[in-house]
Image 1 (cartoon, rainbow, N blue to C red):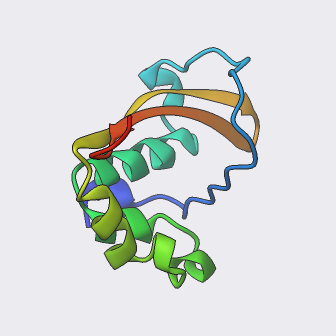
Image 2 (image 1 turned 45 degrees about the horizontal axis):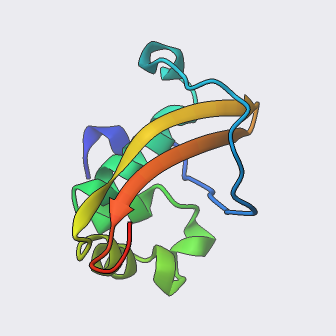
Length: 108
């Protein structure tokens, strides 16, 4: 695992997709917040490191195929254009809005 994996596990649930009201965070504002784990998660996905990304997911979700190391590597490792985080905004104390870009072979 990378040094960035010294964070609490990530809990991510997509409930809806909507235009963000929060302003993107500056990287220096992220230090010491959960945002560092969110950024590390997406960096690991973009680098095809499903093992590292899965380690940042809460333990009871890691056993699900979508969040397992093999599942994350299998999906994100085959992307035509790897996932990368465009920006992150903190909506409230426990919620971050993440804007990402990636492309499969058939859609962006």
